[in-house]
Amino acid sequence: MVEKITVGHVHMSGCTGCLVSFVDNYEGLFKILDNYADIVYALTLADVRHVPEMDVALVEGSVCLQDKASVEEIKETREKAKVVVALGGCAAYGNITRFCRGGQWNQPQMESFVPIGDLIDVDVYIPGCAPTPQQIRNVCIMAYLLLKGTDEQKELATAYLKPLMDLAARGSDAKRSSDACGCDLMYDVINQGLCMGCGSCAAACPVRAISMEYGKPQIERDLCIKCGACYAQCPRSFFNFDVINEFEGITELITGVME
Amino acid sequence: MVLGNYKTCVAARSTDKEILKGAQDGGIVTQLFAYALEEGIIDGAIVAGPSDEPWKPEPIVATTKAELLAARGTKYNLSPNMSLLKEATRSYGLDRIGIVGTPCQMQAVRKAQLYPIGMRDVPDKVALAIGIFCMENFPYQSIEALVEDHCNVKMESVTKMDIGKGKFWAYTERGAVAQIPLKVTHKYEQPGCHVCLDYVSNLADVSTGSVGTPDGWSTVFVRTKIGDDVWSKASAAGCFETKEIESGKTGLELVTKLATDKITKNQKTLEGRATFGVGKGLRNPYL
Image (cartoon, rainbow over all chains, first blue to last red; front, side, top):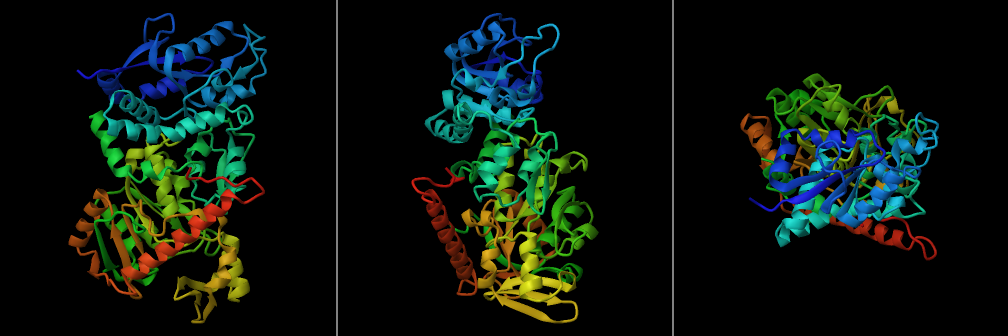
């Protein structure tokens, strides 16, 4: 039996949709749990009451500043986990919790929600609402290869994860942390003279806030939930030739390890 | 390297007269999708179909040969085919998708497969990605300006547009041929194209374009296992007439030269962006 990595699911203020998406790998989830990862912490899946030491923490949801337990837990997660992953739009960018104004029974004073990167350093972002099963799977496999693989596999995993780490570094930057919406497409792609009208953003948007008009994204900003999927999916946000040029081999690798 | 990895490179054209009639060159894309559709290799293909404005493409999911035929020919302006990639698996219910696109769209397909951030259940449903050669693309309004202002013909009377031999050509239904030097078109190009480092769709399963072969033929690069599989089956089924690609000045050498020219020029643009302002630069998407 190969040595597995330890993974925890840390639940902040989120809807559990990210966890469901992870589980939506179906038999792939069993493969991950059988061969590559042990779940050592997850409110809904493991009978563990306190954040343990772990290799990878998948954090779902934003942090409610008025919820002392959440604030403590996210800080503890940073101490106990080697790699902290912001799983999904809420943890990474705030997502729909950005629009909260409090006033909800039975804790109406709980009104302030921030992405986890506002309070702790985050290593990897998986944007999207919900993040896709395949993207979560890929990050799990790459995290495994990074921690337990051969030198060659470590190199691949590092290259694969780098753009997602760059997104985390960018999201944790105080000056930029309020972005992550259709505005990113305008500021960092179209305004920068980089958009070539492929339509990836429109396909990626979970709320259909983006349509393509005369070949360019038209963003209904009132519909945008700030999940970050459009920008991250855009081939002109990041494009790492060293990884993506090897798409055939990497696809075979992923298919192979999931068999 | 500028031509990407490929298993084979041939000159080819479709053997189907109906496809050739409205094809840009050798009818490769239409023919290959038509074959794949018929054989069940794909359930449908995302192509640049017609829209309610003349020469403005609209991405469509073609599930019949008739729909493929309606999308023949190059439009020289933006068709955001990626925008339908997820939708093709949803309301169209496709399990095996074909998609045609420019080099940047092929990059987008592969990014969507390796980093499916907003592409749930899409990565393993891309069954055939056909890339076309592309030096640059134009916004619709640019093509309108080139055709109506520079060539002095109406958009709706144009039957074919072409770029070749250093010129932009517009052919009309009554036989008139308008041409302008390619130099005139440059300022109308889509700016996003100027950072593109791919001419011959390096990341497609099969890529094709007119450069490197005589009129009516296409140059074809077969790149991946998937591409090789479909191409060999289609060839064996008699879909294509093929001949060896010329190695000389009008053949592979020309493809290599144009690819090198594009990449060299755009690499310079990328370098220029780094020092665009005063102590400030523009973003490099590849870093």
